[in-house]
Length: 100
Image 1 (cartoon, rainbow, N blue to C red):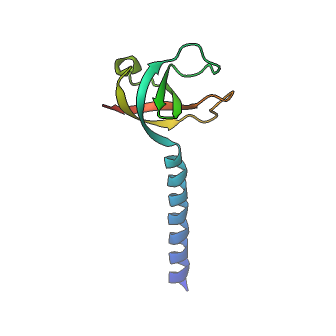
Image 2 (image 1 turned 180 degrees about the vertical axis):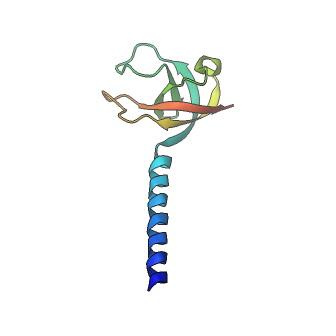
């Protein structure tokens, strides 16, 4: 009986960790496109925009100088910022990595 209880507890803990991981990875996005400076827009967040086919993402980053990657095809990895999009604008990504 004690073994069954211990095994059940182990499975429950493991299941909880897996669902937590899924929610974290759901906020991570990888997209390929071209980075441009944001001009006048209907939304007022982000410093740059990534045009990835028919989808666009507003970008921000405190660790990467996005101006260095403008007008080039790149792959961006980042975390979706909670609470966005606003006013029908695009998702906001906090960029953590850029590849050429």
